[in-house]
Image 1 (spheres, rainbow, N blue to C red):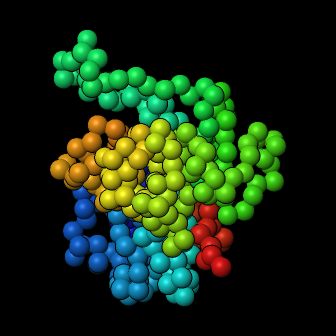
Image 2: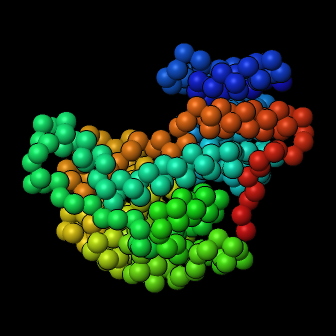
Image 3: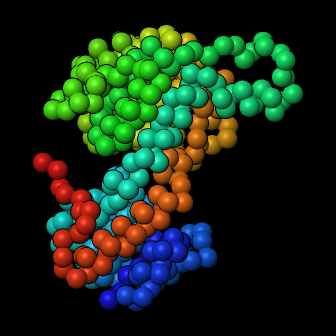
Length: 318
């Protein structure tokens, strides 16, 4: 069967699919020429997405033979799941395999927001070592409260990392966790969490309900000493509201791996601020995690082509 790829594959996925399917891929990197990609879609029964395409009705019209789409990521907000289901197309993603890598970066951003690690490097790089003015002091993690909004697998993995730094952890979910006591955490309403937490970590999925949930009103409820960390999706936050909260001192600092828009232009107003760290969506960017994601995406493709349930299949939410 024929499988098309929307971009360069990890070698492990390339080897698996090239051996077992007729693989159409663009291994030299960069964007596949549109005319070339459209010709592949006309033949493809499987599609390996690296997340750089929008899959909607117009896209599916170009792929009449498609049976399965596998995206090498946890998020899939670029794919219309309902439209795929209506066409009998299974969609797979890669949850689980990136939990520790993302949790590590989340903890790193928490630490950076407290101790200005990236900012300290810029201070040294600019030749200002010895000039305390403009750098200031950090804050301890020990004794502080971390509020996690969206306590799924990644948020749960952050909990012991934070507790190792003697932080108290509270969380907010749509539904309370049955394992609160085992995790050593406590539940808080959304407003209570914002008003209580010294550090607010966002790990929710992007849905219509969570898009823009961190807006002017939400930031206004946070402490002026609060640190804001986002490793979920950029669209969960209203960027202008975050900028104003940081500029005005409504909150103390932000450390984010995701932002709207992506990539963030070099002249964006956020980058004029001294109280923010932005990393370029690298939470899952480790060798081990990328290979694991690629292998799971390939497994999703092969299962879908064979007519079996996908190892990690996206379901239509009620």
